Length: 466
Image (cartoon, rainbow, N blue to C red):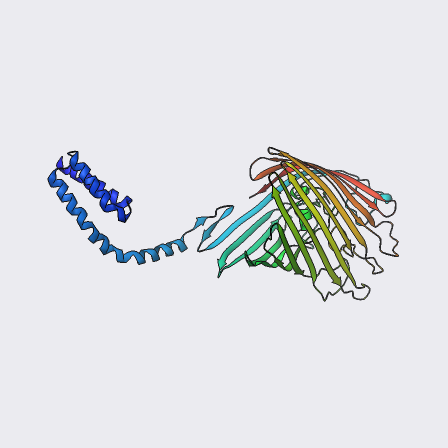
């Protein structure tokens, strides 16, 4: 019995020493031993022996103290070798480097009812479908799939990162002209992977950020990134043989910003203001032969604010590029600007957007931007959008149009004058990753003459983000 009591007291003393800071161990242990003696658990002999043991412990601690630097070095090495989960997203941290994975997958059942194919439904540059027979497809929406990899760290006080973005689709394509080429819905065909993003960044909070590589442009980017059809289908394009992307609201409210090689600088935020300016790979006029000696330039200014339940995002951007003609393709300069505002109060959201350009084209950058006589065509467009969210359900409505003027002295009655669309959408957040979407889109194309065409599109499906 005496041995059991003695062993229990010794264990209690050891546990207390391990759990107590060194500078407080001596007083705490002495108090514990005295209390055990007073309660009769320890005899005078046992108490004296344990006190003697306690007195010998500082020598042991002093002996082990010189090993502390080695233990610290080992701890640093273990930290470098360790792998930890990131605080957010899907990824990990090791050796001071963070690797994150992100992605998206979507698919929709789409039923499109095109206009009848007649002489007066021909519109050059029109986005409404013409064919007479309804079509059904299982396809991607405006977005293909997305798989992104981000690698970031801090070196010498600089935040540096690399991003790779791969965009695989679910639909089979011809691959003639790229991953988003014409659809080929037949056996043994395959989809494409669009490597849209490959860029590096470096910066500091007080300096701002420099981006070098291929990424989304500045002009027109906020228009598409805030469009409700980004998550869905919108105007379907060719639905009988779907590609890996639909049109959404491209060409019926804004010009597609595109993913472009660039060197861009973005300032730190000053209050709610932030500015970006970049030099871009010059783009060819679609359908023309030219050799451009000057790069393109784009810039954007944004302002964000929030007051209680009310918040807003405002932006303005500009673009300019000179096109050097060769032979029958004369020179011209394309310019444009856009402005927009997105306001949110509680569950309600309202967005307004407008763009204007000369020699800028429609649908895509520098598509139908000049006439055969070399003169520029002016263009403009807008869209209005409203959303309201209750719980997990969001309802959205939008209308937009893109207009293309004839060049001075041009006669072209079948050239598109206006592409427009109405969109009604319901979204339900099934989980934090998965959103269910149902949508109706009415698309109309009108030529400068009497020709016009319209189509109606129903879409239902889901999109996942992680």
